[in-house]
Image (cartoon, rainbow, N blue to C red; front, side, top):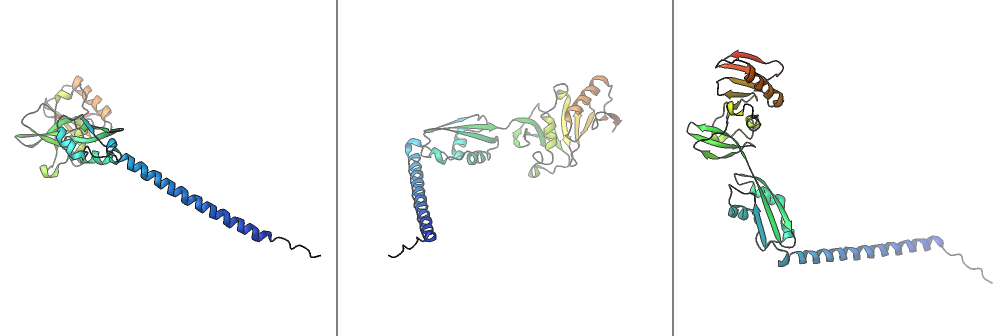
Length: 252
């Protein structure tokens, strides 16, 4: 009687491993096909007219027209909500003078709200003796006006409108103009800054206060208020509060 040949266990294990790998491959392919099919079907559904932007409301605009904003947004009644890119729309609306950005909200299934964030006016500047250019709180030009009661900002050494400085090196003047305390804001005629970043307040008295940089403004404002309240100043005097703990006064 012949003895049975022992099973080749190593070969059998390799075969099982290969079968299991083929099984995983098939499952992976089927799963991928299923995901793609579901994704395509979902995209097809979301691009049907029911999910288009049939209603677009625009809020927050005062100086820019609704028609301008609507046109720049690029949204039409055929635009699918799924395709609306809020960041892209906000960057498009930034082209408008008064707009600093926008918030775009989708309301499924078919409406959109665009909330416009308009710039606020903080000061004026003189491009020439007869023109007051409005300056926004973030340093951008907003158009000219014949007269204004707003505080003036000036950039020492500015060479004219082709080199608008208040959103760049002269921005500290705007920072001060928008943060002047009520205690003495109405006594400030002009806030000037030079290319070294040294800020000066020109008062109605007339005296001037040198603030230095725009750092530590709170303490510097306290020093200015204290001097105005308790010191007898002579027109033409310059008060240096760049170091609030060591205020100095001298004539020009």
